[in-house]
Length: 219
Image (cartoon, rainbow, N blue to C red; front, top):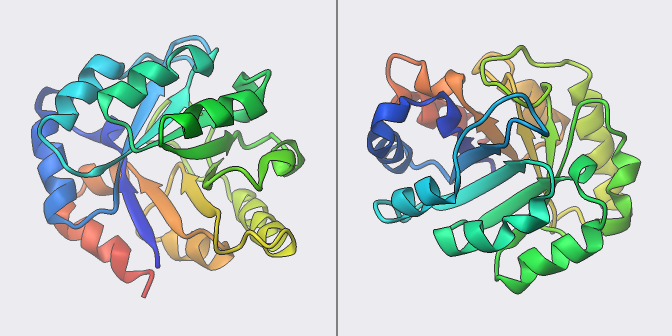
């Protein structure tokens, strides 16, 4: 079953409550929250205080994507703020095993993300311990970028590796970056079962209807 994760990075930051309502009424599976520190990536976005505020007005699954240096230092804060799942970048962690265990100890789903140029081999040692892999199909840092087509091969390779490791039904393949209604089917056909969509939803004339249109692609 395809899962849709609208990224509120592309929503109106002056009215995030409305963005959450759109996600809920459109029956989105997750709310994707991009956390950037202006160090690991050249942008600065949402912190745990904002997530805590959003949590107070939403029952949605908060899919928190940490694009930060030293992610281990903020796991506690985001766990307490209301994250349901926490994804960190393999490129940002010196001790991924310990970080996975720390996130799991908080009762949260664990994801590992890889940049477009990062080989999948870097995450294979941890494939039996995680719940999702987030493949970046743009360079992380800003919304509204163009989808990198070579990501399709990477998605398909990961799907085959999960089958090989007997993790096909246990690890979610989530893809983030440049996904629009016109290219989403190719991403799904390559093996993704969760897609993060930012401007493709929140810049649409009817964002709620657009969420439903994306969900239909998975049927």
